[in-house]
Length: 83
Image 1 (cartoon, helix red, strand yellow):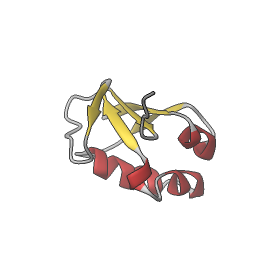
Image 2 (cartoon, rainbow, N blue to C red; image 1 turned 135 degrees about the horizontal axis):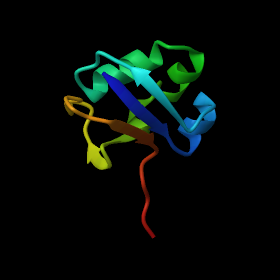
Image 3 (tube, rainbow, N blue to C red; image 1 turned 60 degrees about the vertical axis):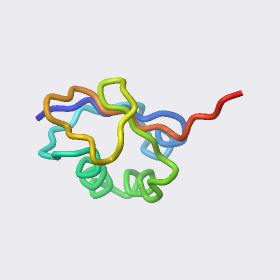
């Protein structure tokens, strides 16, 4: 399946781009993270500490075990803070 993957804040800086379109066979967000981390050293650095990364699937906050079935977009970003 084809997915749009978006990166925000320091993830975008580490990976070097704000978004990419990828072909994946990942069943869950966790599987997608593993595929992305294996792509190159920049992706590996961005996903080295998943406690510092949150994700959204089709613009809804999601957990790592969220299914990617019929998903079009996955976004990764640091934890949000309020004020």
